[in-house]
Length: 185
View (spheres, rainbow, N blue to C red):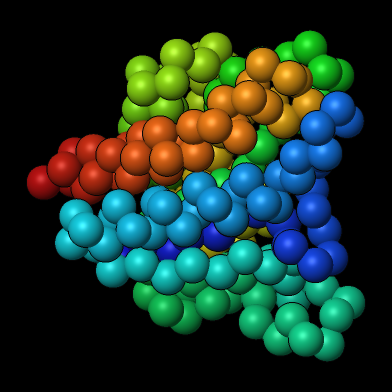
C-alpha cells in the first residue's frame, strides 16, 4: 500500500495553532508524528511519501513551494492520504477526531480505523469521525483521505500528550492505516 503522509502546516510559513502557555507549535508536533508514522508504516511494508507544506492545492504565495500536496499525492498514485494536525478551540476542549469527506466511503472507514486506534491507545476523549467535505486535502485528493486532529494543542492536558506521546500517536495512526488495509482484503 502506498501511503501519503502530510504533516499539517509549515515549519517556516504557517505554524498552525500554538499552545499559549508553552509555545508548542502544531507544525512541530505534526512533523514529529508524521516522521514516526512513516517509519512505522515502512516497517510494516508500506511505501510512504511525506510532504509538509502550506501549498495544499496550488494555493501558496511562496515561490519556493512549487509542489502542491494534493496534486503530488494524486500524481504519486497514493492509495491513502493522511494529514496530521492538532486541534484548537477555546483552551477547554479536549480529545481526538478524524475528519473525512464522507463517512460512507473508504475514507470514512480509514478515519474510523485511525480514530479507534488513537482513542484506544492514548485514552483521549472520543470526538468521533466527522464529515468535512470542504477541507482542501479531502476534496482535492482522488484516494481515500483523512485529516487527523490528534488532540487539542491549546488545552494544557492534551498538549502534554502531544509533547510527550508523539510515538504513541504515530504508532496508533500507523495501526489504523494497517487496520484499514486489512479491512480491504
